[in-house]
Image (cartoon, rainbow, N blue to C red; front, side, top):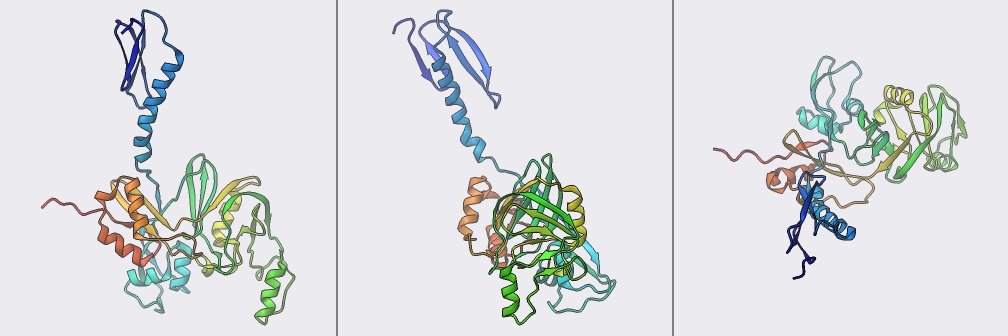
Length: 337
């Protein structure tokens, strides 16, 4: 082998000479050895090739690391107020009324008494993080507001019925109005006529305006984020595509959101994360029939996140069957005797 022959073994250059060594740390802290031969700089292309090879070997490990999505909401006690009923309470806190009934050993149609104590679990896995703006996950019926990578607020929302689905996609806020008159779209006028109602062309601001007091118009065709005069419709799929918030929530969001704010509407019925050493899964109905929510899909997600051997798979099957829309702990119980 000539004095200038260099061979590559792993991360290092080896030479028949005694080269000078320059060590550079990679992004993950491991040294990358770059050698010079006979005090002359090696060909830059060879150096770049070795650096690239090192990073490529690291990439699969980096991609395989679990992505820890945060969990919002919690478990708490709620004191029933006069006029409360399960649908109304569930709409306010972002939990299905049938879940409230089951977890409080009540009939779905149970009449609640003021002062009665209910246990509520409204934990939700945040699907992803944004630098700033709005994220709406349709199956989850939740809106998340971010500012500078921080989750500022999470609100339950009402969305489009299956026959009139809320669209997905990126958007910007192009209009912002308080006390907006509702100009009834032709398609909704036609629906009113089919249902035997008087077809209204415009509804002025006031107690009969279904937009409520605040309106954020989106760049997506014909929809916006707004309040409602029917708070119990929140956390249900009953609108004509628009995104409804509780009157208190839209007032807070309206104050914080400016024209030009951006956001995304996504469709993710299945979420998996690790939080404080525990593994959680959240499963929703595929309301718009877009994605297969199956055990195989969960197994693939768990494998990708390297969590499979820490999961109680019998518990997963139960959660998958219920599809109750709450983040459930599926961590495998300790094997210690």
